[in-house]
Image (cartoon, rainbow, N blue to C red; front, side, top):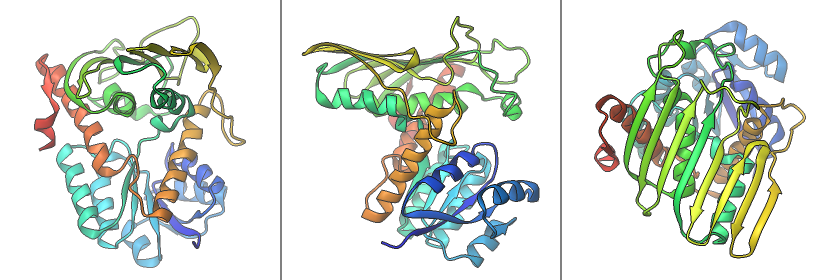
Length: 344
């Protein structure tokens, strides 16, 4: 198969990781970039040697012959850009959060389905190698049938210095971080039937919630707790590690700080180091996220080559986005929220 020709739309904070990852992956390359800010175009274009640069997405689609686009803009622009890609019959990767509303996300899925082009959401946390290691243990049946899980991301890391806009939105931790944790929970324990949520704002200098606790009933019969905090000061700062506890009928899984994985199951107890690789261009402590960007983008290339549906397809991510919407609704009402009603 000939090398796939891609374009990146959006050259902001996180997109640099995506550009590094594209350079590492065989079978695809970015041939053009697009951003409304000429300075960002210059910075990213010069860094990665991309000479074909656009400030308008319509001009990009008109001027290039593309096999895919990687949309790394903010959520309000996702629907028009994905629908533009669908009209041009160009497969699209869309950054998370998928869309500002579930209705927008459903329309994007429909547009790409009607056009017959693949759509994947860049939901990369489940692609981190420690999370994949937990999934492999579950698949081995070492701990039997899971009945309880806890997905935890608690930190006092200053995320606002690098992304100051995070401090201004009325929605913060669930939409920005919790969406990843909720997707991991789905990945490990299956789809959710009911969610109950409590939130708090501890930092008085931000507009949104910086603490969230979500209790979920899974269709599999398991129960899980997802807890997220940017107000938790610990002796050892774990950022940006996701910690996992899963209890099964025949054993337990514990993914602890510093990527220590302890499995107690049918064959006794085993402890292993599941640290992610430190890629040449990556920086600690971000390296676990950066290596997952390579993994998800490689998955996209494989899916395009083989004609298979991405694991984090638009249709799949509707269920993760529905959890985000249900979490905010439940936090406001302080009542459990049924998921199926949102997805109809």
